[in-house]
Length: 294
Image 1 (cartoon, rainbow, N blue to C red):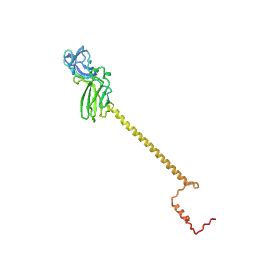
Image 2: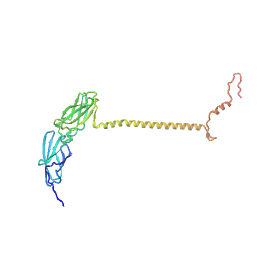
Image 3: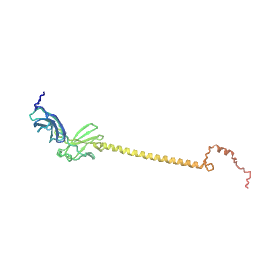
Image 4: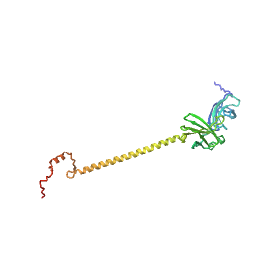
């Protein structure tokens, strides 16, 4: 025997497994599951989006019969912070989560031009690659002094350059440029950072590693080349010395070669003394003895 039991759906339960699938600059894709499996009718959800920066609320209605629901929240702001609440339309228990949108990109091509008593920061307009950025929003510039270990806010501008004065000798600085922060510094763009020393040589932080690698290569390559040249010259000198020794020995051996014996004869030096003993000693001539020539 068996009994079939059908559970009554409880519409007071909250949506399950609410999470963000993808977050962009101006949108967020969220997903959740129905309060119970295999709903047999359309279910109406209320999606409330609270802007934690602007302190505003928006409510969207979503109708679906699927067990898994995916929804895209649009018209968000870059770098924003939001609180998302999903519940059934009858104001049942809710599921919530927080999402942060992607901030605006950093300005490209941040460079330094050194003048007599000041420097100029230059960068490309952020509007060239960010359709959500308006030049009227402007940029803000920060400076970090590594020697004093302090960060200073230098100001903001709607131009693509900024003048910096009163730099101290012997100090190293880091400059950052980003889209101006909105609403009390809560919505900012990504910063572009540039390293600068008192000698007036600015270095882009994105090129620091490649610059170091180039410097190492510039030192190592000439040293290896000089070592190869030195080794080559050493081999040539050894070869020439070997040839000279070989030629000297050949000439020496030929000078002592006896064609009658068919071999070279080398004297030990002992027989030289014997020949000198057997030879008559030549003495001087006296003036009293007449010389006779036959």
